[in-house]
Length: 335
Image 1 (spheres, helix red, strand yellow):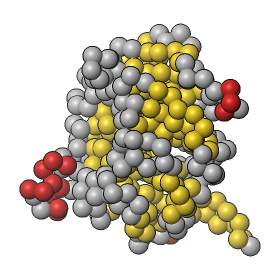
Image 2 (cartoon, rainbow, N blue to C red):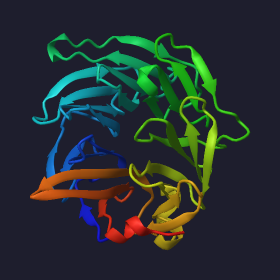
Image 3 (cartoon, helix red, strand yellow):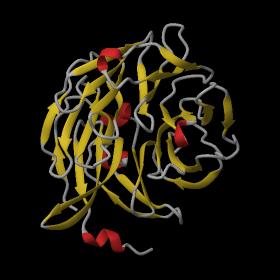
Image 4 (cartoon, rainbow, N blue to C red):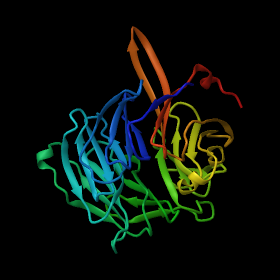
């Protein structure tokens, strides 16, 4: 599994996202410029210029025509994917963190950080099909969690919103009324900041990663714990394979301590686990700093005959993206 090394950012990576078709990869970093790549060969396609702060998160619309990004410059921006044209800017009183488009792409959930006396919040925005009709007002604002809300995603059928962050509590909210429906059991939940959250392909369960050196698999509707994956390093990013029962965790030693230790002591590698058995099945090295972003991808296409390629990409504090296409042996791993 020889990686393709991609260098398009001057600052640490923060987030990676594939579009639904699997042919585009978008990377976010602290250098203000979200960048889009071809997913099969890592070729640089373009950048989206307009932010003035670190870009923390992004999401594609279902048809890959639009892109939404959240940034530390206190804005979330809506873009035309093909042309790179800025369609609309949502302004806030504090830095924007997580963004996620709903099923149907008519709603967006955006989280904002606590800042200068302003508490963290979850904003629901309506997305109009015509950019000329787009407005910036929130149709729902959810408040209550203490500290930063690192991730917020839509639940099944857009009926709920799932959030997690610095207080290590996962919450499920009613997306229409804003009522808090569920919180995870503190006994089995994370003990430190939840850094990442990703849903399965069918939305029935989701995976969280935490600085408590573990990742946990949860049922989406009941918020019950299904599996726990224990590692020996803080977990900054998690991803799930859409085809096999595999999860991958990434993280490593705290970035502030990297310059004082050998890179081998930092454990800067992606670790693969069997989703069912909770056992480690392998690892991929290469980064020279903590891993901050991971993403799986499946690309199906015709070239005289049908082809199916499975890959995953990782982004780190070193500013590099490593794109890995799996060898055929990957599909025959036995435990």
